Length: 311
Ligand code: CP
Image (cartoon, rainbow, N blue to C red; front, side, top):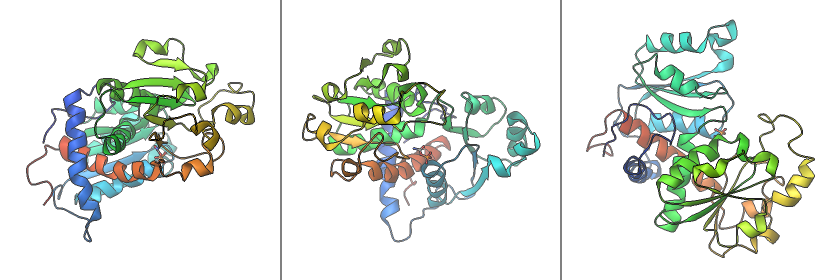
């Protein structure tokens, strides 16, 4: 199991074979997290720095758990406790971390391109844990792993992605990865939340949720990202949820075996109803579980892989 990549900056740069290798490796690593002793020596002596300039529950924690389950030394730095608050710029921060010889730097930052920027100033492998509204590649990979587990394969599946398309890094990474894996992607949301000419990426656009899910295999609900929006994209959250919140009533129009996913965190009752979150077809917590396996796989593969990774 290996990939010829130094960094994971986005899914746009990943080929079909890369994605298959990452998903297969993650599948193999899942079992480690079910053992009584959830640790293998695979990355013993390696150092992973988690550098998070934006809030995170799932991504930051799962990168830390993933590194620790592989026996790496994991150091966590948040923006508010770093010297960024004293005015140090991102390049200087990266250069100073690099001077301590880490193997991997995981970065989340509010600016699109932050992960790529520091990749030009470090020898360490860089993993993008979310950069502005640009990409969130590890989220897309864990989404694919979750879908593949439940549907068997990805090729030809119809995925409907609903909500704030314009501000979502999750959508961009999923579109690139899903198209690479031969999936059909349909985007649904209010016109103010759908970027102009996004169809150029090979996706369909609809503004009618009930129509769009009639023949879907998977529905991905997105969080309304109030922190990234300019004002006036929505008349009101109530109007948004009337049209685009996934309720049991709307779900009745979908095929029985549709899968429901959401990257989290969830605004309950705005983009997804509580009873739908608890529906047996909802895989929201499976996605979180798979996030650990995907991040273990990426750390392992970026640092060279080997045949004894599971011992
Ligand atoms: N899905 C996701 O990125 O969640 P966090 O912001 O909690 O990491």
